[in-house]
Length: 257
Picture 1 (cartoon, rainbow, N blue to C red):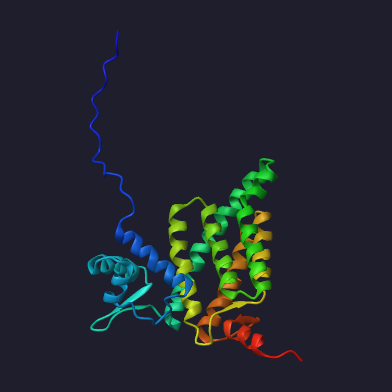
Picture 2 (picture 1 turned 60 degrees about the vertical axis):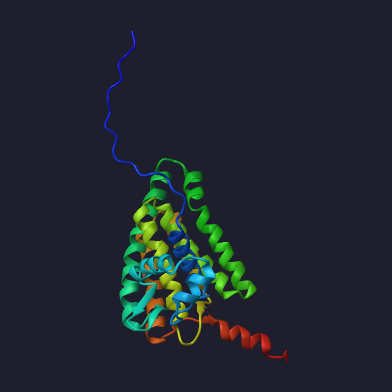
């Protein structure tokens, strides 16, 4: 005898759509800011940009408002939109925010590593951290090749991978914006874009703490590194050697002796 089907009131579901033009425009602008094609203080002229993208001005305007909301663009009445310049006060607030997110991320990942090791799954713990080791190798290779932008990319990608290992969608979402804001802070430095010469040593210290499942040590490494970044971008203080784009260009132009 057939079993009667129960009548179910389905919730109101939305049709599945491909990424909209506005979504694509937002992503394109984010990538341009991250890559340095649009740098802090650069204007984002509505007419030219919408024409270049092949979209309507209203679509571009909506995409830009999303970036204004995230602090990537700034609207000046009567002047238009500009890529946000990170001043000292903004950097102070941003570093405090980033530190909070990264400290939580490190704690979650260290706890995952500890749980795997306590269960006797050392192989699983090592595999969990493999994406971070890949970024460490990329940053080392980029520094050896003298590619500061690529080294910076690998650095920020490592921190983004760390957030992804937390398996927390809110931490990942926050880090997606944080990496762009960090890059903007570096591009806002009047001395030019730079990365620490001991970048890989920072990463190695962080990975060593995470491999041991030591959340306290991982947080200490992050706190020290972000404090140094804050001091460097806010006041120009440099306690460690910083490699800059201009420095590398000068070295290439100097004839051998």
